[in-house]
Image (cartoon, rainbow, N blue to C red):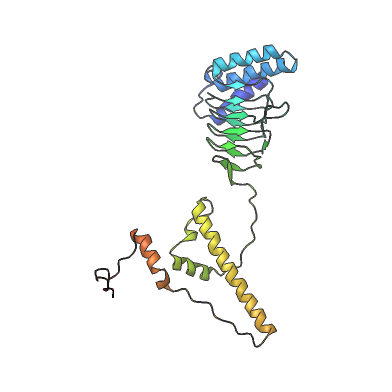
Length: 279
């Protein structure tokens, strides 16, 4: 018992640089108080003393502002920083070395009996105000951003942000098929359109830039495939006549680029010329 208590206190020193000494942590950290009371309440819950366990949980909420259902399973070295407003449901399961910040909810989305709260594996970090709702698993080492709303399973090592929660980083990223595109030609068409699709790195999830990048890559892939088809047709039929594609010219995009620069359509030199008379 005292070994677990020392372990819980040491976990505070590991994750909170504001912690100064043993006595301060033991007497002034509501996250630690809520955890210690929960361990007692969970023991009573397993002994089928459910009313007493719930009463102890209610007292803990009054004392700390943290509500942990006595039926929840909490692992070792669990740390709640600040803690006010944290809610952990009955069937939630929390692994070792997990960190929660204030306002976190491990909640359910069903009124049915059985597993309805999330499972957090070892080393998960959940930012302030995040809501993790449903009977799914957040993989080991994952991070949930502040105020995110997560309703789907999170793979190990991933980072989730937003409403609804979206994965912005993976330990093992999805492998995409590399396009065989000439970088010189790709850069040329980018310059024609006046759009630098590759000025934004892959680590900066700008949806507009990435959409434009995907469109330009698709255009180049289609161009390469058409050229290969024409080459094959020439080999099969010597009489096949290949028509050249129209070239991209600067003047084709001049008006569009001028609108982007000035915010309005370019003014023609003939704008002051009166319209011709009818009849």
